[in-house]
Image 1 (tube, rainbow, N blue to C red):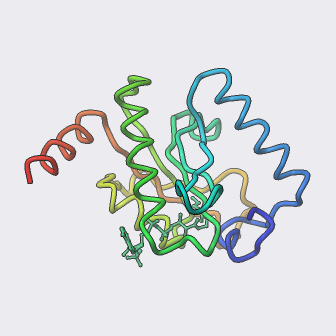
Image 2: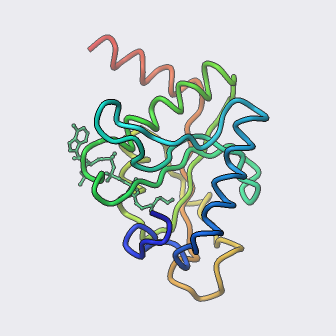
Image 3: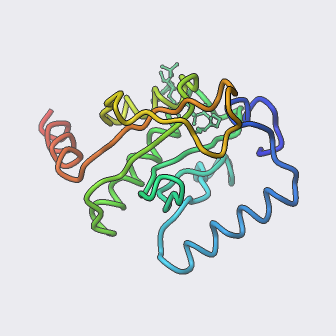
Length: 162
Ligand SMILES: CC(C)(COP(=O)(O)OP(=O)(O)OC[C@H]1O[C@@H](n2cnc3c(N)ncnc32)[C@H](O)[C@@H]1OP(=O)(O)O)[C@@H](O)C(=O)NCCC(=O)NCCS
């Protein structure tokens, strides 16, 4: 999945297999240490692995971020949003976080749509140039979206009441 140039279209480059495995092992260690992280996503009874979604400590942002990457055959079916909602529930209800953010390249419209579908808020004053993307690269400008625990509970309550 991480070697596929279509999946990795909004990253500076696809990943080599051994880098991808090292990266996944690091995420797995984080889950072992804290109990939460970027989880593998399974469509129970159908597909054992469609990608990953979850919450993780983003060291660049100094914040907990909700993130997602699905393999291309599983796009357009609501899986990322469904798994992200479960991740926000976990982050706010179980971990007890006050805020979860999400960032992506300005041009990554599919990812921004997930953030907006979740009800995350976007203030242009939070936008930033990603320090790990080369200067003048089209993927350097990033947007940052936010969700507070309070807003998430309000949105959930209003959805539950119809
Ligand atoms: C970003 C990414 C996860 C978005 O995936 P996605 O499939 O568009 O998002 P969802 O799983 O939430 O699906 C929502 C889409 O499915 C559609 N859909 C179809 N059936 C649905 C259902 N039963 N429930 C909800 N949505 C459904 C929605 O209309 C929506 O389509 P739209 O965005 O064209 O309006 C995916 O494009 C991806 O993995 N990209 C590569 C990695 C990447 O860029 N990650 C982000 C880096 S910051």
